[in-house]
Amino acid sequence: MPKPANRSRLRTVLGIAYFRLRRRLQWMTDGIRYAAERKEEPPPHLIFTHRTPLFRELAQTEMYLQVNKVTNLRLAASRIDGVVLRPGETFSYWKLIGKPTRSKGYLDGMILHRGRVTAGVGGGLCQLSNLIYWMTLHTPLQVTERYRHGYDVFPDSGRTQPFSDGATCFYNYLDLQLRNETESVYQLRLRLTDNELIGEWRSDLPALYRYEVFEKRHWITQELWGGYIRNNEIWRRRLSLDGECIVEEPVAENHAIMMYNPSLPGR
Image (cartoon, rainbow, N blue to C red; front, side, top):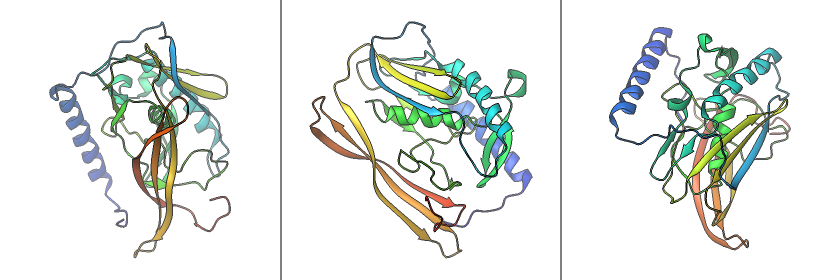
């Protein structure tokens, strides 16, 4: 990987404006049927569910940013909870949520900028896109657009899922998009408790398979410019309902610049 470039503030602002405009034009002209309908009544069949903690022990981060993140997550989840994904439709994370602004109630939360932790309006929404992506890998839905995290900021601490198994997001051009190529109707359900973000994919038809997502390779390299890169491959198994492996397939290959010493314990 090349050494990260330090771009001027003007170039960064102009670049963001350009890519956001390009995305808006794409939404208007690409001919894709985007999911928009929401229903209160859930379909009968639970396909997959997952939950993640709202608060974590993170060194050198202000707790108020995590508290504000919960507000941001509640606002964003309220825009997509109950969305229906019919056959042939595409789910777009940002098209449904819209731009997170102070006028909508979003607060300063934790964001990562060039590998550094800082505060920004709507910060913390990657937890929601991470959850949706991870759940989707356990369904037949196709991930058609996903961006990996470019930096590995914190050493592993109690990690139970593979490294870089999420989907980073930044309004509106770093989007998460999913397409339903099945004959089933899917619905995304989201809710927050005092301590957890909980999601479900439900469907009108029962699951035909189940899935296991796992890390197949993991390695660290040192670049010529001195930095360390953490690399891995994410794969998944499609299993019959009685547990027989039908196929193994690659999901993603990830590469992230490490922002800590790779020899730290707990990595």
